[in-house]
Image 1 (tube, rainbow, N blue to C red):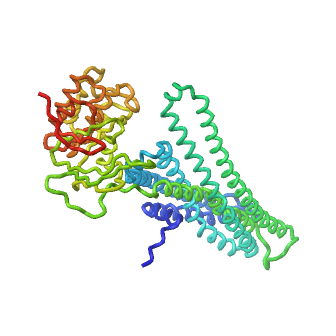
Image 2 (tube, rainbow, N blue to C red; image 1 turned 90 degrees about the vertical axis):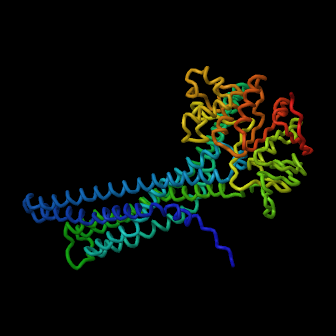
Image 3 (cartoon, one colour; image 1 turned 90 degrees about the horizontal axis):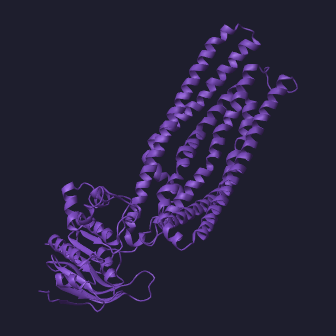
Length: 557
C-alpha cells in the first residue's frame, strides 16, 4: 500500500485549530451578524435623512428611526464584543495547548537530543513561535469567516436598491483577493526569514546571558555586544521586509477600495446633477445615501482580511520552524536487534556493547559485557576518560548503543545524578521537589539527610528554604552535587546511577554519605562511577574500564 501523504502546512494549521473550532464558529457568526446589521443601520440613516432633508417632515418623525438606529448599533456592538471575547478565548486556549504540545514533543526527543541543542533556540519554540499563531487565529480566521458572506449580503442589499452601484462594486471587488494571492507568495518567505532571524537572536542573547560571568572574566563583553548587535540587525532587517510587503499590500488594496468607492460617488453625483441618467426612475436621496454608506463596508471585510494576511504567512512560517526543530530524526534508545529475555534476577545486561559519542571517530567503550543483578552494588573504576560517565549515560538512556546489546528490565525506575548537575533558581526545597512535587516534608527531609544536604543546610539562614541562584549559585560544587543526589533519592529509583558523588568531599563527609547511600540502596541496584579507593572498598564489586573486567575488591578491615 502507498504510504499516506503527510499533511500540508495549511492542513496542519486547520488541525491545530480543531479543538477551538466551536468558539471560532460562534465568533465568526457573531461577527457576520454584526456586519449584516450594517444594512439596517445604513437603511435607517438614509430614511431619516430622506424624511427630514427631502420630504421636510418634522424632526419628531425621525425619532423612531433614530431609536431603531440606536438599537441596531447597540446590538452590533454587543455582537462584536461577543465575537472578540470568543476569539480571544480561542487564542488563549490554543496557545496553552500548543505550548504544552511543544514541551511534550521536546521531552519526547529525550535528553540525548536536548543536550546538543542551544537552550536559547529551544526557549523560542514555545514562546515566539507559538505567539506567531495569535494573529492567524484571532485575526485572519475571523476575517476569513467574515469575508465569506458579509460582502455578499451587502452586495445583495445594494443590488436590491440600485443595480448600477451593485455592478460597480461587483466588478472592482475581485481585484482585491487577486492581489492578495500575488502578495502572499512573497509574504510567507519573508516571514520565515524574519522568524528564523528572531530565533537566532533569541538563542544568541539567551546563551550569552547564561555565560555573562565567564564573558566578563575573559574580557569579551565588547565582542559579544557586537554579536548581539549583528543578530538584532538581522531581526530589524527581516521585520522591515515583512512590513514593506504588508504596507505595499495595504496601499494597493486601499487604492482599489478607494477607487471603487470613488466610482460609486462619481456615479451618484453625476446622477443627482442630471448629467448621467442610467435609471428608469429618478435617484432619491435615501437610495444614494444608502449605497454610499454601504460601498466602503463592502470592501471593509476584504481589507481586514488583507491586513491579517501576513499573519497567515507568519503562522505558516512558525509551523515550518516547529516542524524543522521537532520532527527530525530522534536518536533511538539503546536496544537490541532482536528481543532477548533477561535472566531471573538481572535488571541490566550488556553483551559486546560499544558506545560512541555523537560525532566521535572512535568508540569510548567496546566489547563490554556484564550483568547487573537486582540489589547488586557495582563501582565503575578506571583512569580519567576511560568511559565511566559514558556508561552511566547509556544506562540512563541518554546515549544509544553504537553496537552490541544493552537490555534493561521493563518498567525499571532509574535515578541518575550526573557529575555536573543543574540546579534552578529558587529554594533548595524547590529543587528537590522537582523529582516528587507531592512529596511530604518528612520524605523531603529524609532524602536531604541521606544525601548529607542537612549537614550544611542547617547552617543556612532558612535551611532548605534558602534560595540559590541559577546553576546552584551560592553553593559549592560538592554541596550542589549533594542537592542533586537528594533529588534523585526522593525519586525512589530501583536503579541508582551516581557519577562521582563523593568528589571534593573530606574523608568524614564521604564516609557519612557512603553509609547513607548504602543504607538507601538496600534492595536496589547501585552503580557508582568513582576514583575514590574508599568508595571502591565499601562497594566491594568493581567493573574496571575500559577493558570491562569485573572482580571483587577486598574490603578494608
